[in-house]
Length: 259
Image (cartoon, rainbow, N blue to C red; front, side, top):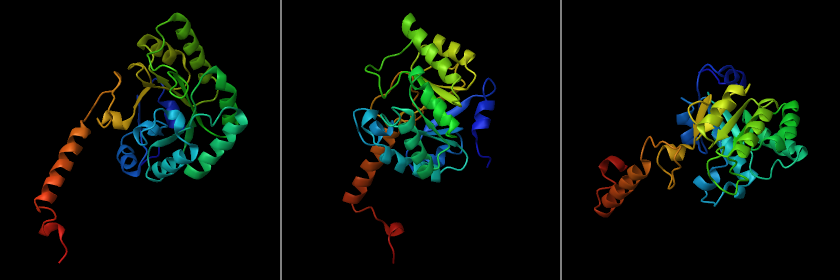
């Protein structure tokens, strides 16, 4: 099994689509590791696993526990760690926290949200040897409204400028979240690094989804999500059958009993 490296990700630019999903646990990581180029230990686990209102609430040490678990379960994919809100407000804090993450999780890189405002932080980290993935468009950690971006000309201009800044910052890739198709296409065409879309059209160099969304486990599904399975219904049915078997003394049967 050949390990996916940052160099291999960079070589995929304009050649082959990059496949990405999120993982927060050993079981999921082991499955998607067989197929995905990149596994993101996303701060979306705040909502998905812990039921928090937004990603701002998740703490670095909690993320590190999940990052270490995912990395230990992964052999092939590039594992990227989503730096939580307020852990990279300046370059010195960013380096301190990123160094801690890389040391404790052994992840292959980190992801930061933002454009021109964080470019100096990205440059500082990459010079220190820490691989960085950028994130432009909708920024869940700081956005006040979760609406599609890039329909208004001024907003479109700012997002494009952010993306071009990230492209030249030393980052090895960037996520483009929830922007109109035409803008994602222009960004991807002009970016020197791979773009990975989430709600940003087929014109990006790759795609990412939250795995729980894709499997139908979530309670809310944005337009950009395609459900490949309705796991909620399958789990519901399985639990219902289990409870029925226990009540009727059909479980455990002789097959499940030690003699």
